Length: 302
Image (cartoon, rainbow, N blue to C red; front, side, top):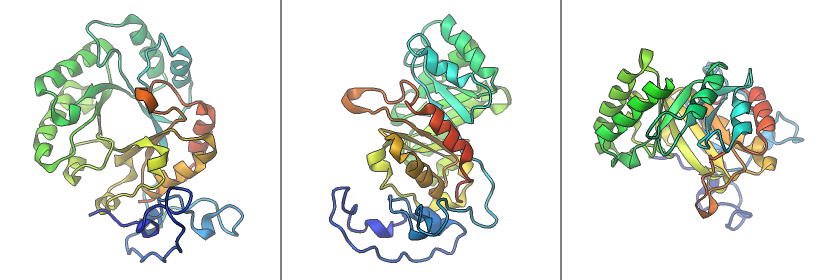
C-alpha cells in the first residue's frame, strides 16, 4: 500500500491544477526518518523554508546510514554526437555512482572503436560503466538479453548492466531473478545490476537488484510523487530517481524530494521527453551546478 501524502488527498494544490486547500497535519510515523519522507509533494515544511527561521535542509534522522547522494547518469548519446558530455564524465572527482550507455539500441552488431576509446577514458576516472539492456517490461526473450549482455562484456568490459524497462509484477519476479543471476555470472565479481522499471516494483525485486530506478519521468510528476511503505525498510543505496524537464530554478527542490524519499542516487536534467525525444541523450544544461549541489547534499533519509 502506498503511503498517502497528507497534502495530496484532494489532488495537487493551487498552481498544479488543483484548488487551494488548507494543509492538514500529517499523522506521525514511528519509523526513523519516515515522517520526513512523506513530504514529497513540493510543500516545504515551514521550518525548512529558506528565511523561515529554520534550516533549509532536512537533517538525517538519528541512527540513519550515512549514504552520500551520488549521480547516476543515463547517457545514451554516442560519443560522436556528444563528445563534450562524455568528456565531462571523464573529469576526476565527479560524484558519479554509475554511467549507463547504449551503443546502438544495445551493444550494436560490432565493436565501436570510438565508443570503446571513450569508455576507457571514463573508466580511468573509476566510474562504473553499465551497458543498457532493454527488457521490454519483461517481454524480451531471455536468450536475447543474455546475448546482448555477453557482447557488452566482450567488447566494452562493462562493470554491470542497466536493465531498462524492467518488469515490476510479482508474477515476473522469478524470471527476472533468473535473468539477473545469469547477468551477474557474466561479470567479474558479480558486477552491478541496476533494474530500471521507472516505477516502484513488487518489493521482492529488492532482493536481487543492486539498485532500482523507481522513478524516471518529468518534474511535473515527480514533485507530486510518493513512495510506498516498503521503501523505508531499505538503504538509500537501493533507490535511484531520474528526473527530466527540470528547470534550473527547481534543482534544490528536486534534490530535497529525492532526499526525503530516501534515494541515494539521482539524475536531473532540463532536457524533456516531448515529441518522442530521448531526454537522456545528453547531459543537462546545468551539469556543473548539479554536480556542485550534489556534492553539498546531506545524506538522504531512511
